[in-house]
Image (cartoon, rainbow, N blue to C red):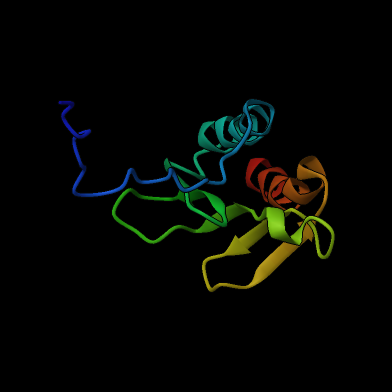
Length: 115
């Protein structure tokens, strides 16, 4: 007589895929972040990897709302562009397919800060 296989109470959960920044993308973003910290404009950051979007949030002070959000949305790859820079008020400052091009909107602020 054989024993039946053990039953599980819950089926195994499938891992939900998350969107994340690739190493090369983070290198570009953190390069800009370092320059802005050196200029005294930015102080802290946070990274969120969600199901449909990856977000790099930039803070002037730790306890505040982010002053900028750099978002990666793969679903918009063939439409408006994979990357977007969003301001504190939720306004899209720049959107596009190339991360370096999209981040130029923030580099302009660096030039003004140094002058």
